Length: 181
Image (cartoon, rainbow, N blue to C red; front, side, top):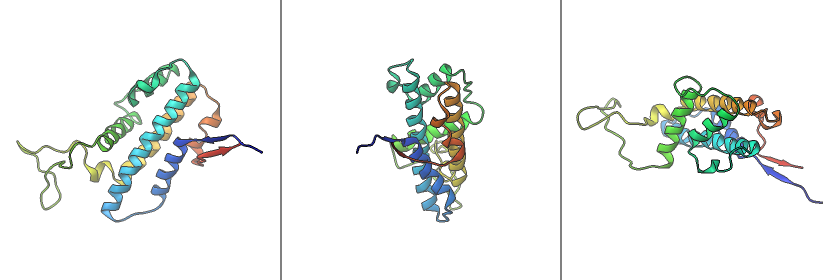
């Protein structure tokens, strides 16, 4: 007997983030480390599902050549979904994309200068960092990324009118990375 196996990366990524959010961590370094992985996982879940939805929709063959924000906007256009990067939840998604890019396209370990109280020093030589790990990778920020990810993915899926099977997990948070049938 043989079975068809489907792997849903977006669900695997979101399951990882949900587990982090459900398990309190108090060590500052662990929070930042887990926050980095969760930010990458949220962005990866968006890209995995947006790619899947674009493939299902079929109107644009070369979507894999676009940046993530362009993929989102293309899919939104197909589904008549309003994307305004200046308001929530889109603001959180724009921030998530910036954080993800900073993490995966890592350029330098020197992100800034702090004083003995842990405050960033800004002067003619030192600027406020583009990404502040204590803020941008905090548990609170990860939770915003996670909830905004689920929200926009559902909006996009509903917009192009795919079967609810492809997005109901975004409401239930019951993730199944594998489906064997």
